[in-house]
Image (cartoon, rainbow, N blue to C red; front, side, top):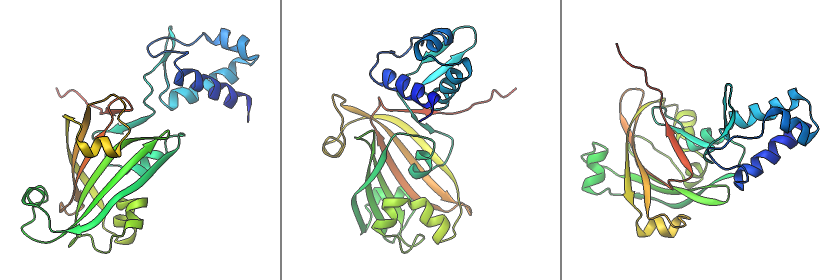
Length: 235
């Protein structure tokens, strides 16, 4: 392990243990150089990596501000699978398929998918990050449009199966974000600690031809994740 990686790992551990608490500043570059017997370039490289992983925010003239421990960032306006999202992180992440079945959907689910008839894949997946189950995804996928989906493919990536195997480009999504009470299933399948509420993201996912193929309810433990968007003021 290189010198800058050792510094990066050490500071990251101190942030995780809150030795460096959120909304406080790291020691100055000079202090870190002295503490780790390292050059300025080495310290800066470690800090740049911490900033890239959303552990700190470098503020000009002030230093490195410690952020809340939210290494996974979900882009609200983007359309990205959990597997793709993991590529930007270094912490271990895991998906477990809790339920996989083909069902006759309820009236509510048919309305969400604009279906008059037909069957859907009902897929429930828990997502673990850092050894804790912190996301519960429930997917309803139109089985007439998306054929041949298996539990193994759901374990890996539904989006990847649709785009690579079925060669159906996924184009856009409509999302709704609300705060909801935790249900009995949430408490059974997630590591909720003392939280009795969750962030619920409802997603309506569309193919390139504007066909709605999937409705998803993604339930997130609120302390582990942040949702970001980029907005431009219209003049």
